Image (cartoon, rainbow, N blue to C red):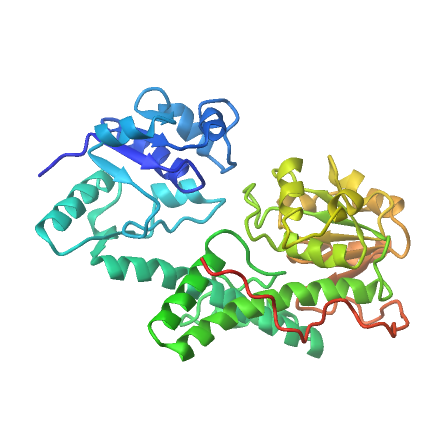
Length: 427
């Protein structure tokens, strides 16, 4: 059987970098070269400050960089020398979760490899299987035809996104009835036919994969004249958009129907904890809706650099003219962000937000001081926070039956929950 001795990976991003770093570590006799046209990114991979944050990644890179792991802009040479070339395609799809990518790579649920039924295709499949067999048990390596591998990737992310949208739809019902979505999720999650994974209600899913893959599935169904199937999966995205709009509307309603010129602290900008990735983060959309209403945002995230936050919010589809320069400040720490704020909004479930000194924060905030917990990270602190003096609003639960009254405004809000969500361009 043909033996792989040199691998080239095209793309040094969130998938290529970690995946090939682990391959290099687990296969010390294989030379792995990761190439990219972005010279700054390659320089970062070759430095002490990696271009992406992922727990355990730095240790993996440092264990084999310069020995059998290399990062380069020499794309043509790396391709010519390689026995196997990894491209960002779905014939060998990754099933990584950011924040646990290294663990997922070293101990995967499965490795999926698709290939043509031709002799050449099967030879390539066997060669790639041999690479993974250095550390993955053979029974966990699944081989399929190319279409099956591609659809498996799309379907897996679509099913996960569907579960999040499903529990988020129930969270709206819980808020209207007095139920607690966490209790509902725990009750249905104990049913072995359902399971308890991905039943965490929140302000909505983000990241590069879920929306992209669901919309790819929608596009594929429309192209193959399956409109009913396309509409079914489109609803997963529509519900996610609705949840974001609903949360932003709740913030505005609670702050006496206006946030114009009010300081609001946004805690967390990454789409989930333990990553610096902001792609499709719900924080971007919450910030957009609040900026559209004139709120002054002070944003803090422990892993997302200021430049990335400004870049995301300056996108033409998010803000207009000088909105960001007028309304957005990126803070160095959460206490600075909350100083003088009318409200703090938790958009990312960073563990550090459970350990903040909320008495100190409350003293520096304007009164009444509001907390909007979009990730249910403060559930165990509700009684303590209410004693301090906070008004608490969270996803899928009425924390306090007694709310500060406000007079409804006669003005029509700039966005409505009844409006259909803006369609995202399909990838």
